[in-house]
Image (tube, rainbow, N blue to C red):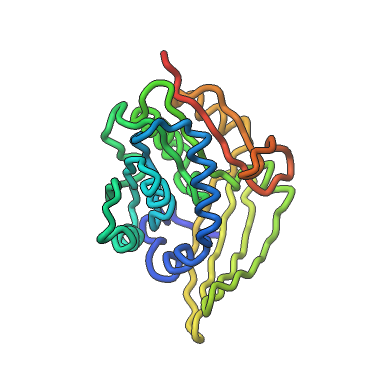
Length: 251
């Protein structure tokens, strides 16, 4: 499958944005916010980085609890949805249009998270640069939580070539190919609505757990812990989700 290395620059417009905005019910956002609040060990009024933030659902959920959020995303359409959702609400949240590696706030944040299966869209150098950028933006001892379901121990035991998802009047088809040479999942996405068909292509790097933990350690994180769900059971082979928590080293 011929997928350009910078596919993500133009992917998140139109149907993909509409799909992701409709995909997660409010109860799921509440449970994820509960998990983040607990895992990040946030003090009252903490500054928290959401990168990439998408439509801002988790930034808004945490801002409603009194935390000060900064949401970063490259998609203008996602940020427009986030700004619309926060308009007229006195919430401590700022939206930043940036590449996820462009985080010019050294040591400013008390915690950070990367949710929505957003890790691995870049090449290996880009993914490593992202983790290092997050580490620089955090104060020593602050925590970083990643939602990383595209991990080898999750993807490969549960691999499916084709899957369908309905979202209202939008139908979403995923056709997967696992590229073992480059260690990545290459996917053709087809969006169907009212007889109109729109196709996009992308890839996601599929790291083994140990390799992702090593990248975090090289970026300046330690104390890496993995959970298999929001219920906090330990991650294991075949789990359908990886929630990874790491702490920025103090020296």
